[in-house]
Length: 217
Image (cartoon, rainbow, N blue to C red; front, side, top):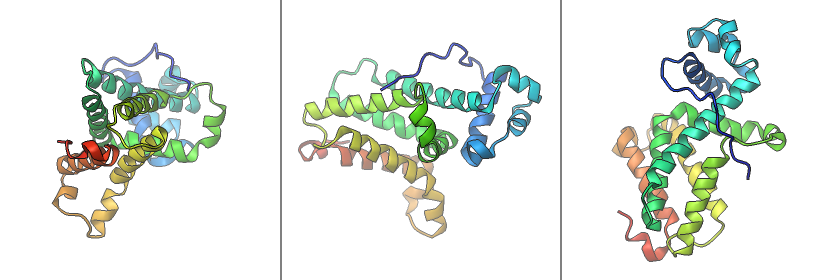
């Protein structure tokens, strides 16, 4: 699976113009999609002129790819940090699950953009030279396979378990406001922290094999 080449121009400070552009573009692409978002509106949201934006990203396609790369590198970096120094397979699995859940709830626009990318851009993925989100999937897949070898995760396709995990998280975040509006969900669904904790434990219980499910804390 192709990974993302290092981004030599990755922004280093929140006030950096390139960082502002990426943040504004993430919001625009998440809410309007690739075709609905415009460079003019993204430039205004970033506090720049259109030529100022084009100086950093000459086309909308280049900007879109940079946003996906930015997101992918952030999640992969957070997972790498969470796994640092951990050797126990159960602790490693818990670390990547909790990291993914925390990131999902902290970056709702980014997860909405990922959902759009997975659903709407099959043609682009088929012809892409590399895939910005591949590193995230590689990390999750590797940890699930490692846990399976130690009898900690339910038998079955590791990739199916990754899809189940990401799908559960995405739907749990995106559909939550609608369910609340319908009057469904208890106190744990109205509070961000409680809902994130509930999603974490639900995912871990669904992943863990019967022999270790009772040990999830």
